[in-house]
Amino acid sequence: MRILVLNSGSSSIKFSVFLCAGDAQPDAPLELDREGQLTGVGSDVATLTISDGSQTKVKANTLEHAIQLVLDAVSGPASSMIDAVGYRVVHPGPKLREHQRITPEVLELLDEAREFAPLHDPEAVMLIRATMQLYPQSAHYACFDTVFHQSMPEEALVYPLPESYRENGVHRYGFHGLSCESVVRQMSAAGALPQRTVIAHLGSGCSVTALVDGRSVDTTMGLTPTGGVLMGTRSGDLDPGLVIYLMRKQYGSRDEAAAAVETMLNHGSGIDVLSGLENDMRAVREAAADGNEQARQALKVFTRSITKAIGGYCWLLGGLDAVVFTGGIGEHDAQTRNEVLTDTAEAGIEIDAGAASGTGGLQCISTVTSRIRVYITPAQEDLMIALHVQQLFQTEHSLK
Image 1: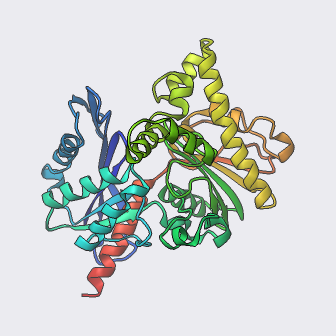
Image 2: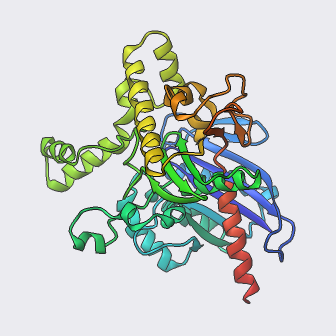
Image 3: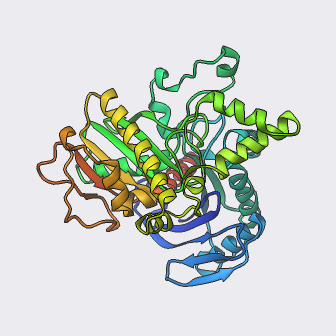
């Protein structure tokens, strides 16, 4: 069995091909055959990277062109037979609750869900339609970032808004669920999953999630992936009155004002505008080290928002047993982790200064005397999607 996984972001498309040796065995191990990504979608020059280390500069000015480049990269002889395709879909909307086979009815519901995640869902739906045309004989599955957070209690989900909105699906959904699920899987396999854990997924998008016994009980993102802690180009949480103020300052119709503010909060906010630099943490770090005060301030606002979230969950859970950093920044940027955990010695956190960083697997970076353990680990979203697709595909075929 050959599984293709497609994971689209706001400016990138990641792809992986997994092999399953035992088609009839529900728990047969998956082997990564090849992977790669197309970055810089929408820019003058994009980069197509394959797992063999090769890089190709290409033009991907439109999403349609970018999708075709990725599908061309995975449809060669080594990947000509695709049994199933799994897609990361950020927001399923209010009517879809589980990972599932994509049918025409599911596609219609995903189209309706675009308004909940305008930064991600339109691209994902376009990617799904294009891939279904290229692989019409394959089974196609949508895996949602929200499923993991359905264990949150009602008091964590509800917004204090009129019932008519709540009945139509306006509540906290939570995101980065596939990433969090992969962290729980890795910690469980290592025998390191404690009772009270906080996961900080830090990348272009950022969220902090509180878990009890590996189940989500609260998370910083809400109805959409725009809320929560500060992010690369997204604002994170704001005073609702500020959003109303921003809409009043926009010219044009009400719909035009809403679209302008939505674009601002998703694409024109965050570290990007505070630092005055592009959405690249390494560039911001370098500028701060060179004395750029804007960059320094942006980093302080960013790490402070994460510290507040972790501290709040520590109080909510009555203490913490572990903090896990994942995502590109969380796994690889030791300086961000240290700034987030500044002055936490009294809480029982002691970082091992000699610990390696970003080794590719689950790694404890706290000292043996630290009361709260600190870990770094990769976000294995693609693997989680492949595992869900494997289970769904084999369950369907066992019923035939």
